[in-house]
Length: 75
Figure 1 (cartoon, helix red, strand yellow):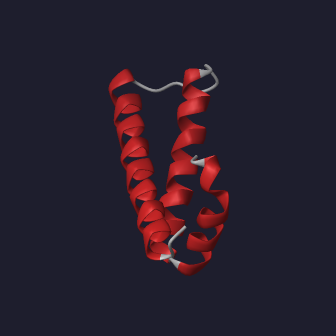
Figure 2 (spheres, rainbow, N blue to C red):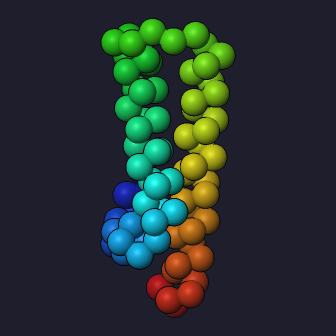
């Protein structure tokens, strides 16, 4: 997720427990969604869509935090 910001992500993970939690949950959801989409796990479509929406929300929140960090540090 957001690979072009790896340096900032590493810093935020170390400095901000909330960011680290968001990032961890996003990765967890990504693995679940991939398993379902590739047919290794089964899940109802409605539940899968719910997980995808949560994943997207977490990505948006992480992105905002990254942009705020960039702005605050003139990067």
